[in-house]
Image (cartoon, rainbow, N blue to C red; front, side, top):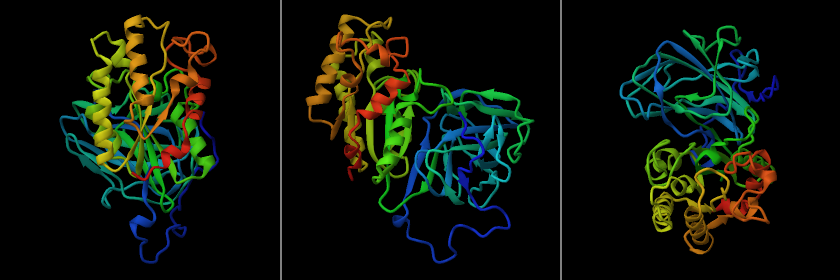
Length: 397
């Protein structure tokens, strides 16, 4: 649900004094860049030129100097963005009047991304509120070949033919979309010492079976807890892809292949929560516990080499799902035993213990079951976020 007309993006408008002081700039270390929203990039159909996309996203932490990150990671030819704007949703595709602000790239109103390239915008003067909705409007002037985006947004966005990114009204945005195109991260300048946590996962982290347009994925609930706690870790980047695996490509590149781009490149990342493995286990591909543990070891080693800490999350029960069987259950239990007691991780988020039924530990507790015996509902998502020790996320690396 959109937040309505409350101004989430308090940015100066033309004719107003800038909210950024005109004195000498503060050293970057004093106000670190921290990711406030993210979505994993993947190949997303064919790119279409002369299209505007109004992408609705939800921040985790607040700060000033909003920057967006555009991605052509899966493109095989350049894509040119003729315009980019950040505004505040009012209702549907309509924006709060006066809130839609132009973004630039190296001072230019347009930017061309080469195949595989990722680019940040210039910082936008003004303040962004924590846990607020923003609408990022992009005009794709020239594109072709594979498009880059995130397929399962669980958030309604909008599209239009032609250049309508600067518009406040909704009249030209007659198409709805459940995906995010080209946009894969937002960052802000945060408080001194602030950092972020990145959640590396599959469809459960992506939010499947949580309420659409309500921001009830477990990383969203985690963001709420972090804001209320007031610690130094404030940003949350959701890097879940539905169907994703640790070891093999398929629904997105494997966790091992996408780790650098989706996780370790995020601004201010301090801790990585690794919550993957169920798709490897239930694929009937012969993956063993030892195979998964080897993958976890590589993720942890690379994350630590990048200066982050690593939290391991136990794999949820899934008895009742069509691919469940005793052999798969044995692998899941062996993997979870290692996550809890193997000494690899800096801390453990025991999602299995928090959500399993006390009467049958191989099943989700019915009150947390989204209905397919694999994906938690909103209550289950909340229980997962509540199972994380927030102090474990404060690690300085």
